[in-house]
Amino acid sequence: MKSKRLTLSVLCMVAAVAHALACTNLIVGKNASTDGSTIVSYSADSYGLFGELYHYPAGVHKKGTLMDVHEWDTGKYLGQIEQARQTYNVIGNINEFQLTIAETTFGGRPELVDTTGIIDYGSLIYLGLQRARTAREAIKVMTDLVQEYGYYSSGESFTIADPNEIWIMEMIGKGPGVRGAVWVAVRIPDDCISAHANQSRIHQFDMNDKNNCLYSSDVISFAREKGYFTGVNKDFSFADAYAPLDFGARRYCEARVWSYFNMFTDRGEEFLPYIEGKTNQPMPLYLKANRKISVQDVKNAMRDHYEGTPLDISKDFGAGPYHTPYRLSPLSFKVNGQEYFNERPISTQQSGFVFVSQMRSTMPDAIGGVLWFGTDDANMTVFTPVYCCTDKVPVCYSRVDGADYITFSWNSSFWIFNWVANMVYPRYDLMIGDVRASQSEMETTFNDAQEGIESAASKLYSKDPARAKEFLTNYTNMTAQSTLDTWKRLGEFLIVKYNDGVVKRMKDGKFERNSIGQPAGVIRPGYPKEFLEEYVKQTGDRYKMPE
Image (cartoon, rainbow, N blue to C red; front, side):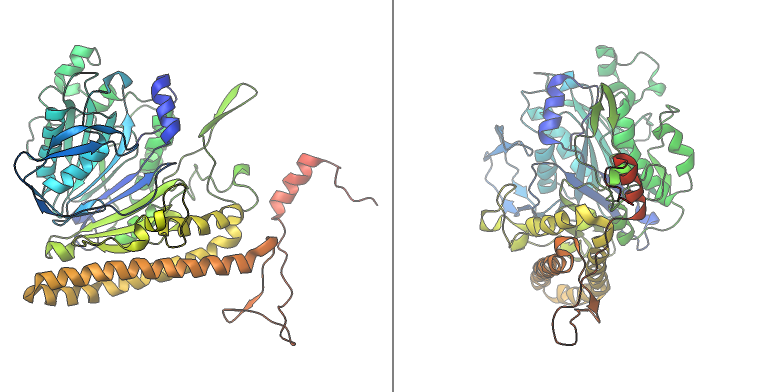
């Protein structure tokens, strides 16, 4: 999704402010994971995006059938395209063949946006999922669509993954009225990890390696024509030509990739100068990890706020007395004419939904593909298993009771997780432990149950695939609803325990009562010592007690 950049045109900046879109994708090759699965993650970060689980049922369509295309971000009608003769079941961002597609928007050169195109990046994702079985097939479907109908959006990085391969494809239009796009796709090696976060990351690529690199025929010649590149072909960098690095791209975007590399490789210190602006040498597109990475590792990585690094945002004055690792937008601000900025970590409060997709070639597709899904911020949500064969959206992941971004519902996971999170943000250190306990308990339960659930589904599948799919759909719905119910109870618990700035005493997991059965006296934690010292420093003698 679109990132706010400091040097974009006024038009693009207005769009960025209006949507405030900025996403993160983390990637693990199958030989870099603990269980041989390919793993990709996605955080849909947007002020204005309602977190829900999308569903597109499989279908067979008459030749010549037309379908409407609406821009994913805004709902704006863009035009009609011909429907495919056959489409596949899609739940969230995974289809029935375990194909997963995610994205982040890098924006790039604003003059290359084609406002006459019909296919926007969001529609391109879900059309690709409905029409392709593998990552390579999806690349062809997606690039053919924009060539035929025009590409409406700005520069985009797509993660396109199946149980065997993961690709990053970067695409940007050719300007108003010029149909098609220039693009390049690079396969991530099976033993490597990668990531992208709103900045183009493909620099030089091997044009002779057709097994691991695909590209539009004019990706270099078009850059020459526009004056973006003048060197020899071997030195061509897609990122440098179409998305020149600026401060926002480096610090708001590439820093999130750095944080992921810092977690799972030994090269974080080596790349820190690039993030700090001391060098312009970019990080590699992919690296070998220093250990095998699990699905749960990726879930936890999606909760990152640079903790324990030089970019940690939980330790300075901006974190407040309770060290909240969040900052209010916009990312930059001015004081006395001087511009300042806040860090932008992987985890951010404006997420609509997040997922970690697990794809396994050793199982039937219906069982092997799991979209671990959650609404709201990864840090504050619970990832529940959504099997790729699911053809019924859990009620709590839908627009139940008319819920949307401005309509609350007690039956909506998006709103219940936001309700709890917004209680915790102001007193983060004080309350996050209770959230972590419930979060960890539920995710551990789902992780521990996975083998048994899939064993039962496999036995069913061998006799009756339809029953196995129904079983996994029901399990998907049950875990989503049980998580919602648990989070409601957590919210009720938090308001009782922390009401009015105090903490109610607990014993053996229950609120404590005194000898006559009345609620025990409360704990008044006050403010942390370092905050009080700063408070006195700022206020001087105003609140000093007289002798």
